[in-house]
Amino acid sequence: MNISKKAEYTAPSETLSISAKCKELKKQGLDVVNLSVGEPDVDTPQHIKEAAISAINKGFTKYTDASGILELKEAIANKLWEDNGLKYETQQIVVSSGAKHSIYNSLLALCNEQDEVLIPTPYWVSYSEMVKLAGGRPVVLPTNEDTLKLTPQDLERAISDKTKGIILNSPQNPAGIVYCEDELLALASVIKEKGLWVISDEVYERFVYDGRKHISIALFIPDQTIVINGTSKTYSMTGWRIGYTAGDVNVIKAVSRIQSQTTSNPCSISQYAALSAITGPQGCVEEMRLEFDKRRRFIVERLNSISKIACQMPEGAFYAFFSIKALSLNSEEFSNLLLEKANVAVVPGKAFGAEGFIRLSYATSLSNLEKAGDRIEAAIKIL
Image (cartoon, rainbow, N blue to C red; front, side, top):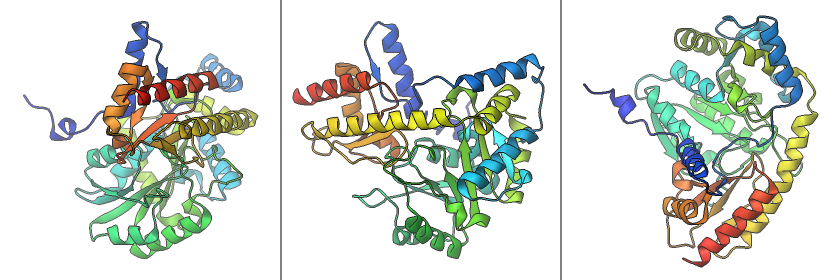
């Protein structure tokens, strides 16, 4: 008895695999610094936890509408208008079990067999696998070597008669890239002319630095953009699993139908917690952003002080993406070396379609980052 080809050819998540290995080493008593996982190290804010407890006590533990509770969709619509200038009605919004689930549902709603979906490098590890699971064909699109950003010229050259759309991530995982208004306008012009869909992953929108502002490409091509966001990163709610999709009403109806036949509704308790997160005090988010900014500056300076390593200053998210092209090892060999010899867990750039790079998360304490910097430097000295 054989499993399906889709299941057989689906690669496991590299980041989750490394994180699991790191936890196993910690169980063995090793002092491992885990910089592989993309989640804030602070606890979920208290008012959000209390909203969940209140929901349990009030008996809000039953099925909800498959697309999410109305109050949460109203709050999301208000947030998209007030924060992003995007106008959506509640029937244009679906709440799902995390932003990853939102992206996958959107791909299922858009992709026919062998439709091409463009994925600029470096990209989040799950994009290509989700496209394949949805029946589409991921087309990896190399970007500018210096900026790691997609240009409209490169985008236009990659489009074929089979291209259905593109996944755009800003602020970006893994390199912390943030596309400015002019860059988005230029890309939007090509996307509009070619009649493509764009899935805009904006889950890191609140973590931008140096006076930058997050801008959604949906401002320029709203009818062709599917906006993806969630509460996981912004409110340190990774385990609560709440994401949302906003866009064309026909796409949203399709997403809702798909969800109703697969997971039904997202967790009712988590939805009430997300409602409190979005409508409640936002000072906790700014505190986290400021702390990440300190860590960002520290780790980039520390990495650039190490021989044969080069790291550009990330503009957003909470990752440093540093080059090891001057070393004799590839990214997988180097990440294995760090884990096995230096007890530092990072993710090889190969997983993001960018060989010669390493991603680390600075969503951890400064003491951990200091320790990791020392260990990385010591590991390179013995090469």
